[in-house]
Figure: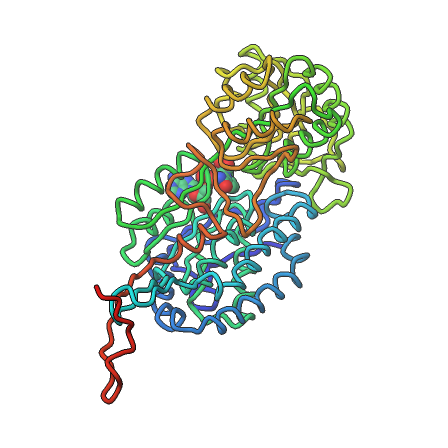
Length: 500
Ligand code: NAD
């Protein structure tokens, strides 16, 4: 059955103009086209921004209690429909259903954080900064904010942004990935069911053209972006040049350093789940395992043993632990790194092209878990973000060399160290130039009440997502200084005369 996914504007589906372009949606497990998606041009973007702008005055004046009540209802609805959302995500992205359910759960944590918005929006108040003069600050919403998100977490990444933006009193235009657009529409329906006023949350589907229109639109006050580094850099520069506040999160090369005293079974389990979970299509996936030479062969053996047992298959098959890649082009691009790695001198220790697929795989976009050993920093499999199930293994003599290697990499999203030595871990945490650090934890995604974001080429802008930084990003502070004369008949004041 083929479906057509349309925009969601002003609280209802919006069919788009007659001349609007369309894109195909695939089931990555079978390779079949399962539907089409509308691809907006500037006219549809204008319509969505106008709806968001019209909804802003009433929504910013909704009381904190009213906003929180909508958020609580939305939380319940997403929770109740999380199985359905996971199935939608798995069918278009390819990840296994349990993984998709995990991303919905992590997104829900941000909704739960945003339910506490009355507490988060408290300003500061200083009484009597001068005689009968008070000073205070008011965090106010920005207006219409745009959210542009990647294919790899079609529910969680938008949920890093819109619950906080909406709770702060803004209205939102979300432009999800055109590769897996349906989850965003289902979330929009749940917002409507939760009682969110029409126009507060809008979804515009599209590609580069829709994004460009949002980046230069005079009524868009801020842009939150997550995607690859070249596009993040472009989004940051363009939106900032058009006077907008921007947070643009980019790509990653996440290193897992394994020291000689680490528990190698724990490290091997962690490397396999962090490198191959969701077929490596995670911004926090471990793509480079850096082993201290003394334990490298032993670790490789333990990883290989686990990879052999990994069940690759369709996302909706309960036995599957890893699904296909998102598109045929992406699968081919990822597989090309295996040949490039060997050409450049690496050893192909595990070749995912021969890994069995449950049910045979058919015309799906399959590539099994792969490992390139003896990778060096100048090889393309190391310098590029592969974003697939290809783990590179690098060998270093010690902690110092591991730290130097990680800090020389231009990306700085996530990293982890595996060790039994608290002092070594503390030094790693102190000196590593990466935004999110795990100690014996391979994927250190912060909880919703902390903020998510990398350093260096993994983030352009000043604010990380959700947590207190998210609230700060979606508000601007007004500082008020107020003097009131005493009312008629009131004493001039009971001020103590201190003699100065
Ligand atoms: P992408 O950069 O191709 O696309 C991201 C968004 O930008 C999509 O909505 C897409 O339609 C739009 N887009 C694509 N090309 C564009 C262009 N030329 N101009 C304007 N907009 C454009 O990324 P993707 O392939 O969807 O997602 C994978 C990437 O996202 C990886 O690099 C991954 O590391 C990154 N990512 C980063 C984080 C993080 O937190 N740092 C989280 C998730 C994903």
